[in-house]
Amino acid sequence: MGRELPSSYYDGLFRENLAYHVHYKDSHYYVAWTQVLRFLTKIKPTNILEIGCGTGQFAEYLRDEGFTDYEGFDFSKEAIDIAKSRVEMNFYVGNALNSELYEKDFGAIVCLEVLVKAIPPLSHLKL
Image 1 (cartoon, rainbow, N blue to C red):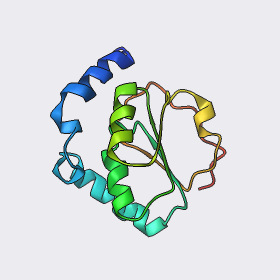
Image 2: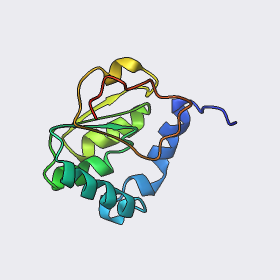
Image 3: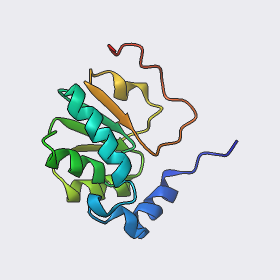
Image 4: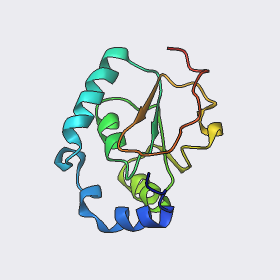
């Protein structure tokens, strides 16, 4: 099993890799995001939490499709700074292992391209 890399590693990755700065339609993740959006459109959540929101590309896509009650966090401060400059949504620095981040009720929780050892149980969520 690998080891967790520090947030500074991801800060550099998000700052230097142009893939995280392109418009969401030009991202290699766009096809996957489109599938998630199709699902969200069907269930019509009142609010969305994105774990590991990166630079806010998916959040921008959600906003453009009418989803505005959104929160996204990432443990990279650099990613959050870029996200905040990209789209006006609720972004903050946070660690997916911090159970306090899941205390609020969300209509949908999205977690894409995130690797963690264990996310805290979300048993309080209504499915």
